[in-house]
Amino acid sequence: MHATLPEKRFEDSGAAEYDQRITRLIPGYTELHRLNAAILHPLPADARILLIGVGTGTELLSLADSRPQSAFTALDPSLAMLEQAKRKAACLPNTVCWHHGLLEELPEAPQYDAALCLFVMHFLSDIREKGALLRQAACRLKPSAPLLLADLAVQCSGQTEYLVQYARTQGLPDHQLDRLQQRLQQDFFPLTPGNLADLATTCGFETPEPYWQNLGFTAWRLRRAPSVPTETV
Image 1 (cartoon, one colour):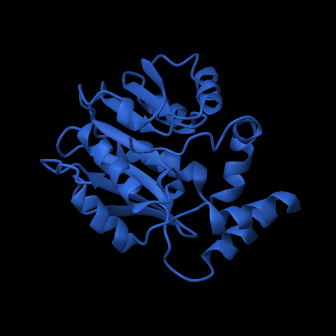
Image 2: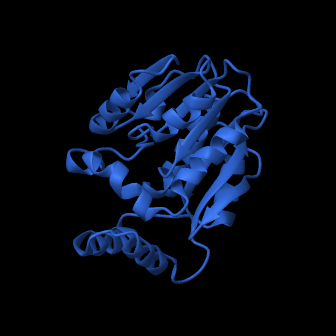
């Protein structure tokens, strides 16, 4: 079984503090969600959208605000995060199917018009796990449907130090800054943009198109190819 999402990384206090912490860690976090909504605007009003690693539901609320007729499947391996998202989404007019678990456990049919996977893949240490996540996502999308993928990508030296200093300017406490620096060095496993392009095209997608970048965090639009290659072990 492939661990296609990081499990139990955001339970208890990690989930409770996530919303307050994430905007201090990722420059342009709010703007990215607005941009995602704009990119998905051409989809049919009643599009089915898969949220891989929905977390506390920020992307769900952002998309639902402009897409009241769309139906969402919100998936996360952290029950604490999923429960927060459910509470936030309680008043939405949209149909939301909640799934506590891994992407591979989700049925492949019916297929989705789009998917989002934001700040998930850089937690996967093994290149085979990253590939499994992309392939599992491709299998659940209609041909040519977009996957919006955002992750930390290595593009120059000193990036992690810039991120720590940015978090400092945003008021992250010193003890959390120390923990952030440790996690960036030990718990994050970013690809280079070139590595991602190679991986995506072997896992059922066309060449990724970047559309947003901030201090090493990058977002790409990946279009599902006409067919998805069979996975090899």
